[in-house]
Length: 438
Image 1 (cartoon, one colour):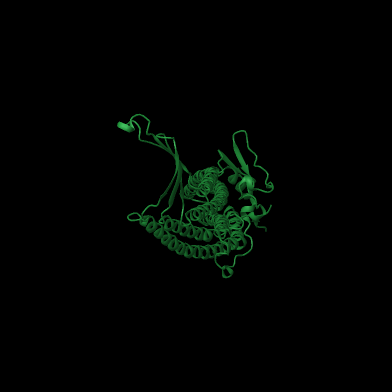
Image 2 (cartoon, helix red, strand yellow; image 1 turned 135 degrees about the horizontal axis):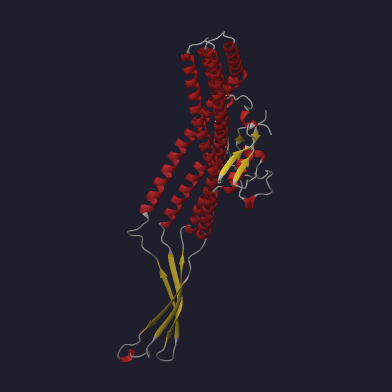
């Protein structure tokens, strides 16, 4: 048995513009009706990463953060001013004889390291946006793998229900023969008919559930319809190596969600530093030339300096808010770390239980149930067993198949959950595709 590891496709999680080489995943075939056929979880993941609107939205958000970073590094623009005085009055100021014209340039000078603090806050926000995109990719991969496993499991429930209908039909025919031969009372035929109709109702319900699971997968792949090939999906049956919860060591170093928590704290800390520096008043200096029309048209230089007096507004409110946001980020990070550790431990434990159940059902319980059902049908035809014993053997066999199918589904989905929880920042995607051989 083989585990398909998505790290074999390292470029899947990177934007197209950053991929160093093409990914060797064949494109899924598309039918004339628009149905996309996927043969493996890798193919479904590649398709989702290429088509998902949520990733395009996240990339647009990253570009917006890049714009904020560019804007943060820009210095204030200079101001040009033009002033005219002493004209249009009375006496010596009549007309423009005493006109004084001043041309000046002024420049605001940022003090207190505001520009560098602004750049630092923007860079932290940009880095956090990159982590958010990586997390979205991991979330999408997990959801695609879970949905694909769900669709396969739903298809197998349909097969189990169809087989239940077939077996119930065989029992009904055998019962009718025994009733006609006078070896069974008519009430036994009615029981067999009830079992047949109950199986038919279950089959219809399984078909509806399979349709819902297929549509859920199609939504994630941004496709009208999805078909899974091959129909048996052998990767779904792969249990992989036996998990060992005792060896679980918690979240690995560089775990993406921990990095996001730390990144948010860094961003909040940078914003607090920026607000504190914004409390320092900026200087405005100006210089120009003044021309006097009266007399000989002399000129003179004009210099100016402006300093705001921080008497009332010292940016107290923004500093208070930024400090509170930092405290909240630190508290959320502490809670998030506890949640991640607990979630990892719980997923490891649940995977171990699901793996053991699937292994036991496949190796021991299912063969025994198949043998018992076969003996019951043969014995009933020979008159050795009653109808109730046959129906009970069939019910047990169907229940075992459903339990095995559910355990396999749980194993594949828990592997996807664990891969998401252990996703690392150093490779935007490292989940284990929870399924099998090529």
